[in-house]
Each structure stands twice: as structure tokens, then as C-alpha cells.
Length: 134
Image: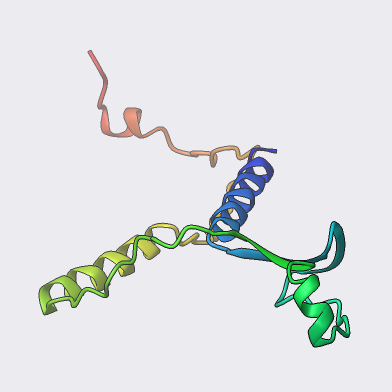
């Protein structure tokens, strides 16, 4: 359950960073007070009114275009590639090799028996060598 919640949190934070860098524009075209066209991807098409020169002077402000911009974050922390010296490269490779070997699981071929009885000793060595604890 803990791993699942960690995955959800990291997925949510990744999308938050992704969508905070996007910029959106909404382009709308009005004819009078009526919305004629709306576009999220480019410029909105006009109402294509056929106006002559005489009617153009009378209805000069009939159509209008509005652009609403939602700007995302433009300043991100950009890291430059760092050149590593030979000593740092050597340390890094040895560190990775030893760190990787720590977590290698080795399979043991030892067979331990649960109900193992010791072998019978036919000769009593203490009596044979006369070695007694005092």
C-alpha cells in the first residue's frame, strides 16, 4: 500500500511540473455581442461578413478579436553538464561497482537438517586418555 501511494504522489507531481510549464492561448471572435468562433490551437476564423466600402464606414467596430493568454512557467533550473576529472570518474565507477555488489543475493547450497542427531561415539575418550575435569 505504501509503494502504491508513493507512485501516485510521484505521478501527480510529475504532471504538476509538466502542466506548469505549458502556455495556453484562447482566441475568440465576436460579431457584435455574439460569439462566432473560438480556437485553442490558432487564430479564430472571422465571421466573413461581406461588407462594402459604404457599410464599412458605418459598422467599423462590428467585429472584434480577443486573445487570452495563460502563460506557464518559463524559468526552470537548468543544470549544465559537469566535466569529471579522472579521479572523480574512478571513484564513481568503484562506488557503483561496490554498491551494486552489496545487494547481490547469493544462493547457499548448505542443507541443514532440523532433526539431526549426533553420531554415536563407541569409545569414551575421557576414560581412554584419563582426562577428567576437576
